[in-house]
Image 1 (cartoon, rainbow, N blue to C red):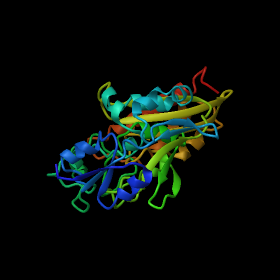
Image 2: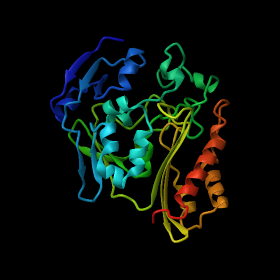
Image 3: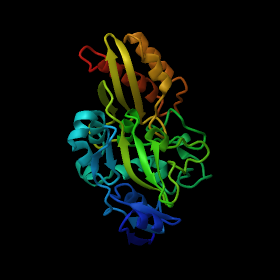
Length: 329
């Protein structure tokens, strides 16, 4: 591990002021410390924000929830309002990592976790995300866990998290404070970036930006489902995951929000797929067309070709469950 300096922030303004170039915030550190040990990331300075007053969950005036950036994954998943009103979020969080890691990992940190691409972690291998311009070894290497949507010639890595997938389906927003003290809200669906020519940039955060909360809108009507397909039952990242919020009006689909994990550089949401479902009677043919639309531009790279038919089957299964008799209106 490369030597670094350490500072503890007393408040948000202090934290932001100390976050100069090459300085990183640290809270739970469940991903950052691993990357520092391997020297995949080597910040000159860490600013500890773990003692800031950002660990509360409050109801908003609009009827939603404001989840502080330092709320742990365990506390968020167990919160009574989250379990009652946003069960897809609770289930997604509990599908990730282990109990010990969820006790330490934070809401803000979870959003910022980095890919688990094997070549990103191996400093002996070329990786455009770790070292821009060096190449993407995954293209011709072992790429079973890699992207089938939204990738580029520079990078086929995937975003590994579960929480952000559910938050994308729920239309949540990330609350960010910058160096000038200004606060902005960014939809979770827009927080992460596709790789294009700059895979080294995972998200829209600029130096000094501090995530202060995630804001959930009032709960949507309908059945909420989180389905995660992985190599083993626990402590494994998604090969494909689906967060679905689907409401029925009689025998027709009234609304649908679908977000996917394990398929792209960010949680994936295609509103054209949702639009073709709304107003229709659910049946196998409709769900098949929805899967066709979702995967129209999907591209495998050899070892991950199986993800295309897998995603099709998972989406159809989730839609069947969400629209089955007794589904919430």
